[in-house]
Image (cartoon, rainbow, N blue to C red; front, side):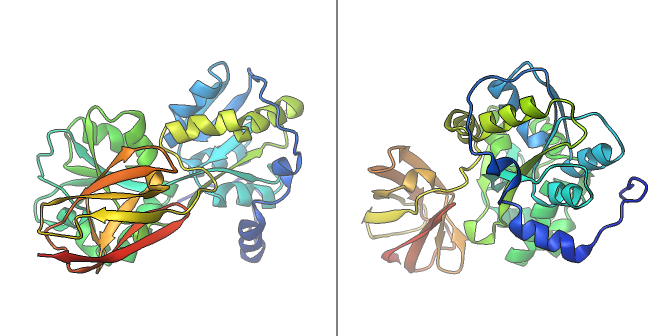
Length: 341
């Protein structure tokens, strides 16, 4: 149960309105984008940003954890200059209560499944997590990554089956990553960025794009901060092309991205297990490939050039003849009919 600061009364209607308008105004209204380094600030940030933020500025003091917990700490008077949340809800809530300046969106993410490198559960698809005896770790629904996990599983209609195999729920995604990497569980639900920053001990299992929730991160300057000018400089640094490039390198998604298109699939038929090559534009940001019925295919990006990108995928065992869809954060491309032989 969340503990609120005295007098923390919430209007559901006002919060809903804030969540819709959160991308406008506030920090983003100050359009000057300085790229100068700003050090010495105290930044509260979701644990999924543990790796990326020190790369942008290693001299700040960072406190990483669950966005919900960090927001409650700020409301209870914890000294912080900026909150960087793994959702838009917490900063909007704090803004409605007068604790922070108006929030601004700054990056996005996607949900993923990771398994130990040795893959003892022999998991190749999210659907394999329904198998009896599989042990799964996830974050509690009260924290952003746990809430996103529930959304994905409900969208896929497999939440009840998956929950029977869940053996623990964590306070943040970092704890899930740790347990999976140590082999304490067969699989865990985390952010894609958690895998990208340290893939050596993990194997990635993609989550179908059609089941993904909209995962947008928002930040806000704390009103009680005594470093308002420096706070704004840091926000500008995060929103600058250089700051954004660090997030993209670590597996986060840009706020906007070009839609994919398919120019050629070779061959246009094949049996389960066959490797197929796809050429097109903006395939380098693909997040999923699915066959009719939402059957996911494992894929590998071969060329990272947006204008001449290329990837390969393996025809999944449950594939059916029909159009293949390739999805990236901005949209979906649909192929000609692929015949499963």
